[in-house]
Image (cartoon, rainbow, N blue to C red):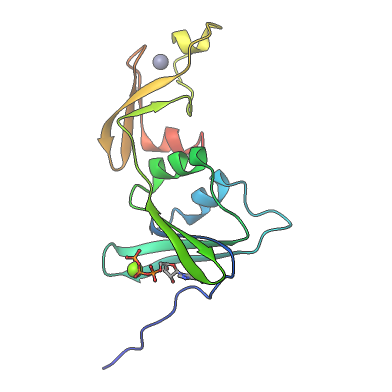
Length: 154
Ligand SMILES: Nc1ncnc2c1ncn2[C@@H]1O[C@H](COP(=O)(O)OP(=O)(O)OP(=O)(O)O)[C@@H](O)[C@H]1O
Ligand SMILES: [Mg+2]
Ligand SMILES: [Zn+2]
């Protein structure tokens, strides 16, 4: 039986479409972006079919572009996400989030005795030891941080 090619998101005029979000992570992505708020139109698709990923989430946000720090946070929970910038209904920019080898200054170490938690002026620094789901190790105290601990901080 033939199935129609669905349009999974309705067009937006200006804003951002975050595609290829790991299934069920759309709400975590919104939380990172401080959404929903009263002023921003947001459309969410969750657990939709993807030839690339099996299933995925999509978030489209009217009238909003993303800051680099927000993109870095999204990479921690949705490492395959693509960011499409829409202007006047056209895609004018397409990028991928990128999970770096080191995560600096975004997360707190959960070891209370870590030098980053004792009042020293030391920025946090973690090495990525597993990429998906992401697992980090603190550069200073070697405490391991798992994906749930990471997500709860974003
Ligand atoms: N004006 C728009 N408003 C809302 N969503 C849009 C708009 N233009 C494109 N999109 C969405 O942005 C995403 C990327 O669009 P594109 O046409 O590049 O799809 P694609 O060819 O499947 O790209 P990719 O290889 O990144 O999957 C899709 O989810 C598409 O539905
Ligand atoms: Mg596609
Ligand atoms: Zn530490």
